[in-house]
Length: 212
Image (cartoon, rainbow, N blue to C red; front, side, top):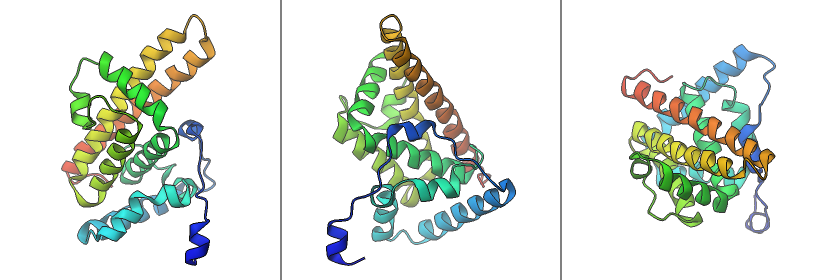
């Protein structure tokens, strides 16, 4: 792509509803093989020689190219697998980049309600605004490629638990007046809580050299 073309290139963006999207598989065995092979090859190569430019491009991949290519590779992989973990991290990144104000609102609500150390583990400042959460998820993503992979997963899991708490409490606020909105928030909270469990499990597997 020329410099002029890049200047006017508009990245493919996807709405937050992608968080609940399901990608069907035509050949599950082949999809699984490709998912595991590409995830392992990418991570092994980059972590062996974490060139700053390469890491920057991987962190910014969805901003530049959208999420569909990654979805095709990894979205159908088992949750507790290497491609499954990478897919969830990229999806969280898109969710925050797409609507950082809502992410920050839910995070702050959860931080105030959740009686745990998850906000500290996630690592966002207090209070955390939209810009701080964008920086947080990008830092976590960077940790996948040039830091402690398990710690990055644990930080992402902690983030999910905080936002799940915020979503749950906000859903309770809407239950009487806007039940449909409350239901959507409850669904998001459940999805985030599940992601937190899966990412924590992946971190444990990584430490045992068993995350494939």
